Image (cartoon, rainbow, N blue to C red; front, side, top):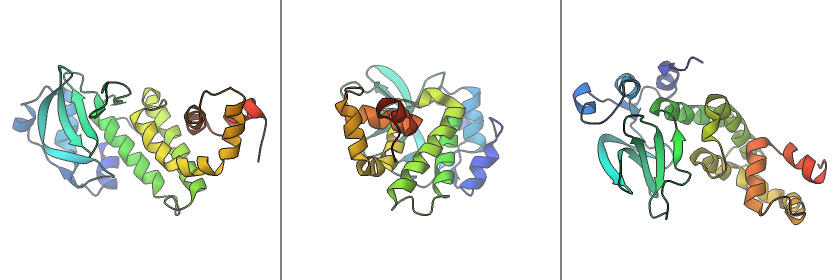
Length: 213
């Protein structure tokens, strides 16, 4: 896939996007790449998951730093920083909102991640009901994300947390294996072990406790 293949995103979502005018976008500190994407594609009109994208942006201060708010959930705000226009998600009420807040390098990349995750999830018939399928889906999505921007994939990151919600049921099913490896002291807690497996596969535990079913 070409980096700037906007059609992949537009076609998958049936071109259901907010349209932005050049005059509207000039109100904000947006670079050429961001403007190009918002003019040619836009942001999804309907809520995807819990994310609600905004038809009109807001300039807001977060800990005395200016950001452009482009979306929101019940728990936080999706924003672009000025000039670079990298994407961040701020959990409001968190003591340090900048901790693990980075999402993507551009709004195009963020939208690409949303599209890839939805497309892959659609290939798993029982992703909502079968813990193993949910885990396999999360692993496939993460590996695709790594190919595009590995810096967005680390424990407690925005995208990794989203995939963790897919995988957690399967991790509960395998609790005895995690309990065994945590007991050895090779992980400080279950979450650390969970994230290692989420990001690298269950094979990572083979070096910790040996091969298992």
